[in-house]
Length: 345
Image (cartoon, rainbow, N blue to C red; front, top):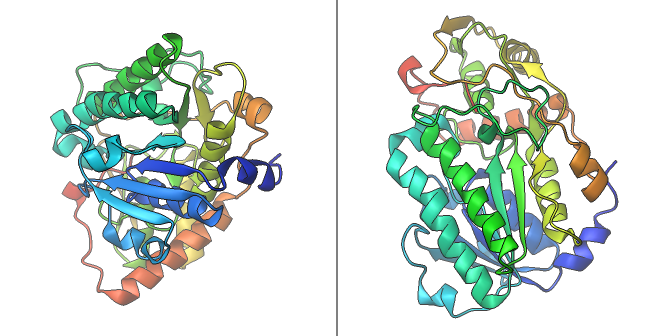
């Protein structure tokens, strides 16, 4: 259902756009797409989870600029004294092992960081987009998850720093919008995968692919029957750009994800087939508050943005596996340990 990219291109070309978290997996792909469409892009990142290697191609462009700073702190003058047309906030660790490593900073990134960026957007009249998450639905009692569902989140559990941080960030965004202090858009992103996923960040696709390529045991937490909906990174980026460009009344949060639901065990089987790996599957206890099912209702995105994912899981995994193979050829794969892996998202 995707329409021609030219529709969005006309709204992106020649704009000055700030992307917070632009050195991360998703952020770097977004920066590349925006630069390719003619925008001047400023990437803001503190490199706690971002990777400078993701920016090598971008830094060859005269329309790309990097600012190293942490949005938890007051923004530097080189940003606050500039005029931006659009601001994307992707700044937050997105995998459980990483965001649980410093839960206070994770929460403050979503709350203080979003507040700092909203103030900047208000000051310079920029349109603002928050990348929220399907984690705001928690371990859902409603399936598939529609934007009107208020969620089932454990507000005191080990994932709360991320889940509740994003929920609070959404509150800030919609309050700014209601008070007339800015035009905001909120995307609730479901599991996204593709090239540049780190083999060390604990996300299910990167873990399974890395272990399969290394002929290691593939560690599945739980019995593998829990489900996720995997969206290829190029499709997610397209959805974000379309949402940012969407005019008209405030649409509220919009799910951006793939409505094709897969079990973790199905994912493992596809990866094993595509890699030809002989890895065995081993099972470990499911982490606390790990969602049992996850599938977006994307009806709103289809209606408002004329958007739906175009990449099948097999197509996306082939590209992802090829990237991991190229990275493995550059340096020996150090392997993974069960204690370091959480096959969640």
